[in-house]
Length: 116
Image 1 (cartoon, one colour):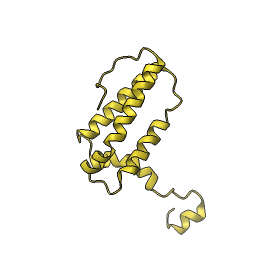
Image 2: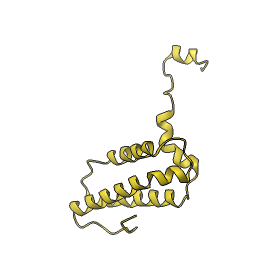
Image 3: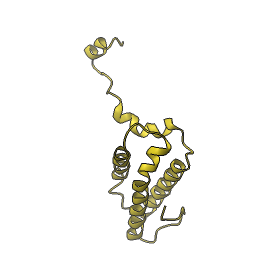
């Protein structure tokens, strides 16, 4: 990880965005190691896509204070993952919602699936 694990406030939006990009690069570089550490059944490209998706959720955040909090949380997630402080089930929660088929909501679909 190129940036220190700190909670310091960014002085400006430009600095905060630079820190976000640094965290993003660190996460992308860690993807192959994550696959190896957790013995995942899918390639590093899937992990990289999920990392990008998580960063895209907050793409349009412009509040420096909120960006600092998100950076801190991202650094903590990366550190916990790389130190293998997470269980496989905790890591798989990021991927699980993409794999699960949507539940039926109308009566006939539930009936065909033998659910009430």
